Length: 110
Ligand code: FES
Image (cartoon, rainbow, N blue to C red):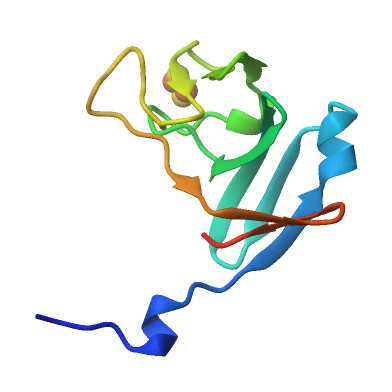
């Protein structure tokens, strides 16, 4: 059994945006270290996902969110922001990242 060291088990955290900006309807796509992250407001909660669609790389931050469902702007595939599941293909999964809010600041640990 391999036990991760403290250094390996802690993920780097990045400040990636503002809650107020999401509430104004701004779309947010940022680099968090080597990872492109898209931010969404989903039923009042901030959700961070991979920036590109797992289907063919569409820009997910330009998609529409209705309820908990994000629709990709390129081919219209739908992803549940609460689970990462894809309605069109069970084998597709949207990566979601831990989010921490501090005041207006959004921090993500991809
Ligand atoms: S690239 Fe997103 S549905 Fe095709």
